[in-house]
Length: 406
Image (tube, rainbow, N blue to C red; front, side, top):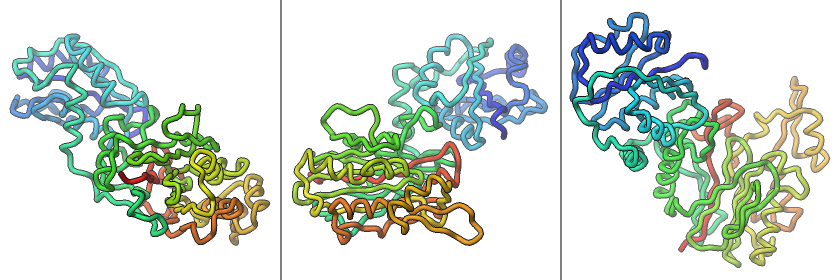
């Protein structure tokens, strides 16, 4: 379905409309529903006995029903995302305007184009369960918690980081609830530009945290602005930051990725840790984001680079990361081993993970302290990871996370 097409939600929830009622209501919004896929919200124990496809010839119809109105909306939204449609028209009555406004705030993000179209809806003879504006947030949270995950949740660990001191890992893409194709299913970052609402991201985080053994409410994820700013938990946040560090037990720091390199840092001597998002720009700016993180740990917590244990995680590999000739020169100038030239490919391929490793070594971190065992290519493994280069937009994000155990 193209981006120009739209979906219509016909809000007849709690109604027992006759054929004539439906015809009258639909006649008033005829132009709004033409050419759309229709999703009709009905209470699960109401059966009108009407053939909607006969009432709306040429318009595909589907019935979405649940005992609670908000849940029927969330089921319908998942169908909307399956179709990769972001234009939505809601046909309802003026009495429900505030309810739908709150639903838009909780269940959708600004990436959707949503219009409310008012008509005369047949009398709602059945009161929707929990149908109040104030209860919508809790209903959405509870509904998400009740849903089965898409795929098995899991994460990768590094043998380098002592499990008795730190909880850590690199998440994979399954085990969550995200339904948009490029974001299925354990998308872990919220942005207004993507379809996953904040409530769904919080549930995905809760599931990962429960599985990994930390408190999702104490998770702090880097903003990923492709720079070298480092935020220390407990201090004022900078405008943008690509790494987070902490020495607080129970606090977990993390960085997101959909191809960029994830780097985790553990200092078992001074009991502190960090997580960095190492995009190519952040890698090649000044000392690089990885060493900027080590230096921040040194400044804030007294870390000696020789004590730092590092785990470099999944990212797009030299098998797939084709780069512009001019941009690649800075990698070659840093170290020729950081680029790969392939026959029949005029552009070189860059190794961002290796670049970060070499920067850390030159900054005083022993090579034996840097684990590269989880540097799988994100683009080559659609069964494990999200990848911007493979999936385009919108894409999901995995994270690398680490925290000091309580």
